[in-house]
Length: 204
Length: 303
Image 1 (tube, each protein chain N blue to C red):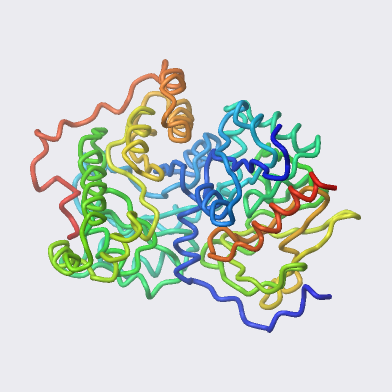
Image 2 (image 1 turned 135 degrees about the horizontal axis):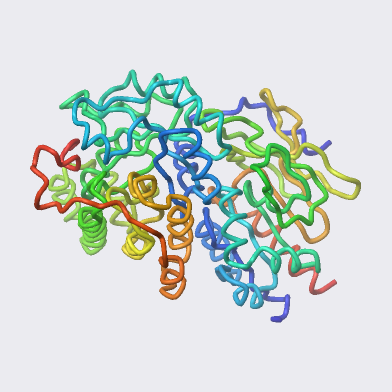
């Protein structure tokens, strides 16, 4: 594995907005690689699970024989960051799942799919992100975190509207997840935050 | 409590960013036409990123003739109930009240579609007036940019729906690609004439010239029938695939749906496409375009 001083960040490229994550990583000077098959996974130090359709990602991960390898790497401590569908994929438990839907897991949280409603309820709202500050939250048929177990840091909540107080960003150890899509904005601070998590781990 | 200290500002719905962003989430995926809740479930199980709820698939619209309209709200509701993935539905070109109805039903995307009989021969729907996002068909860059100027948040190449023949989809993808590429070779002073020639807003032409891509996600549609068709469209630059009649007019819809989903993700892996293409049963029979009279070509609807 490469040194974590200049880590290779993988982006799961089965479906969804993986190119936007690659662009965000490139903009902050981080190395990145698309991950589509088990060999690709071997070459990366960390993994971003992008936004997209979580049921599709689950099926494609299974048919590409990626599901177990990703689950195992995360369980073994590989840093990972999930946005929206990616948050669902990193959660230990989901509610409103499709029949039989499985996740990579790792974060001891319960996530509700499509929690804010359908697309006509998708919204933008400024979010106060602990450790970063205010940033633009872009929520698209987004999930929220229904509950967290001890040890999970809550980094952001919804600040107004009907869903006020709902948890939309969490971290535990090497795992980070947001309900919203930093990759759809020009603000790269959440990606910097994640890359710092990956490199700090190496120097710790 | 530092996380709760943002200045209170109401959540804003229906922004261009959440409309276009929704299409970003569909990228690399397959959107399947379905006419019943059971078909919607088959599509979801096969890994579709969304379903298009409609009463008749384009192949049947062709066969039956007559005026094709928005689906019965009961049928759209039934499909929304059946699946957890996004549900799209079609409105006629220019029929803004069908679009209002679909928005009130809670569909996630509206396709202002040439597959239905146009309701207005001069005006498309003013899509900025809606919270729900729209996808529109295009055969070339000018058409795509006119739709984006009207508020479309996603574009699909038109192809020729209901034929099972990929030749028109190929033509439109190649046309869009070469129109875009050509713009990027022009200098600033040439863009005014380019905008005039494409009959498209100058600001959008300038944006495409600078970025080398459409400002919204580009899918392909119209005649895709096999995993290899889907993969070819992806290699030609599509960011995802609509499959209409190609799945449920084939011999083994479940197997074909799964195969097309896999081929769309792994579009550059010929070994995998070969593997998933085996024993799929009968494909949609298909229509040769040179036997299709001009008035039955849907791609020429819209402008």
